[in-house]
Length: 422
Image (cartoon, rainbow, N blue to C red; front, side, top):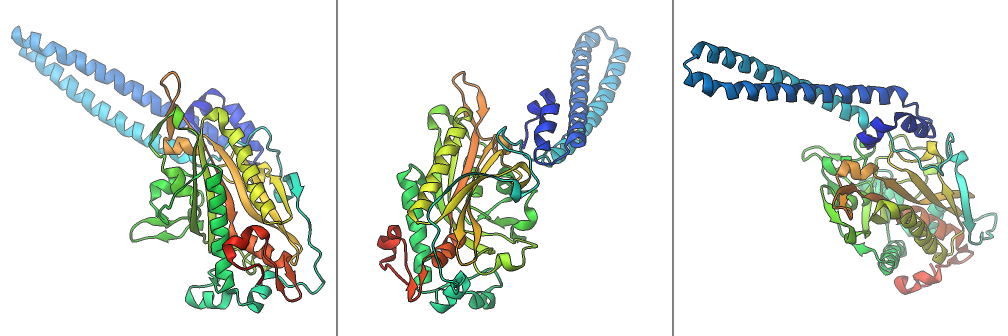
């Protein structure tokens, strides 16, 4: 959530930066500032009335001592009237506050200066490409056919047990999942990330804190009886660890990693691009999160991008790194790098990771702060990235490494798999 301080001090800057997202925020910013002005005016009036009430109340005792009961009664009547006015102003203040907050949460984060304006994925900026493209025969199979041929993933059984988008991994397919998870966690631990095992459900406050609510409420699975939400990513519980926390400067950066299943409704997703593992309602992901000093967050972002790149390189997959344009970025992000790996059988790029800096957008909602060298509380910066999401990694590994009599596995996974080929 954008800070009121920024909106008050430079509304034109906010409007200009949001235009990079193709968002016309002028009207909304004006409404927020009007609600804020009305809220502050009602508070100022109430404070003046309370001061007047105290002044009148201080006159009662001397007047009583002088026996001027009629004047005392008039003062009491005046203070009663003031109390009613203060109550009405308090109600107006709360109404303006609610209105302002409802408007504030509709504004997305401001894009960083490096983020270009664009209309969609076609306008994203390629910053790097690496790896070797495999040469596969014309009859190469897509991963859903390979999974069926080698009994690695049972999509139909998943439909029977739950529904479409909930695959069942079997045999060496299940082993590949667990091997990738452990490889990612081990790599993250070596990079200084502390492993956390969080809950798979969060409350409404946690969903709001990281920006999933209200923006992505329709994409989350809601447990209505308890008003909990199944997590769409472990970013949500990990970042919310710091909700309402005041950190010391020497506690930063905080670096966390976690493996969890993730749950997303993915409403409206259909067609050839969602076949097999391309888009699921339940999938496994290893996440990395950093909480940093504002001055260090873009250095941290670069380190996270380099770390994810190292993982993809070790898996020997062809990849590219894209800096997203304004229109393609998530609601909460100030800058995002997407990692895509090439799926040789499908002949298309598959997104496997997003690494984002949210600056103070999440921490303002979370009230996650640190005490600076002057002892003043300041908002931290929050970042997160997939390291990595498994489904499309698995899809690319199966497709790119297929041969006539099986599927080879990258060397880095051999010690985790205890086999070299499927």
